[in-house]
Image 1: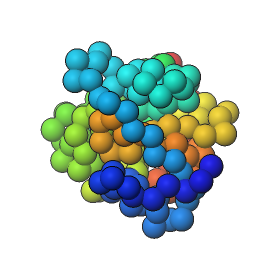
Image 2 (image 1 turned 45 degrees about the vertical axis):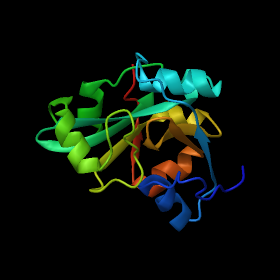
Image 3 (image 1 turned 90 degrees about the vertical axis):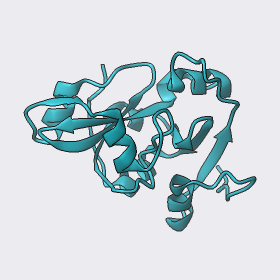
Length: 164
């Protein structure tokens, strides 16, 4: 996989972070449909990629602290498993406005990379079963493909079975 640099105004904090880290990645753009029922499902379909390889970035509140869960778009975030993975007791989805403020991204385009305020991050352990995975590049209609190990290293994430 060749490293892709910013072209055509596609540079986002996520791609800048990847370039700064000299990590191999590929940017994939597609036409976002505002009427799409699921951002992640739309990405998988538009890019012709199995939904198990496309991961969504969800922000949850675990015992009062914003925490990122990265899970396949084919599944759901198991909030109890996320809380357990970070040593917490209770988790709920974060207020959307708080997620946007903290990350610097809009819903449907939140990337685990290049966030305004880096948060504790847990990547579903299933990601390790793929040579590369896709995550949001920081904008609706823009995905970045990279090795799961690189995502984990750059976000200082832990891995745990947090998807159901």
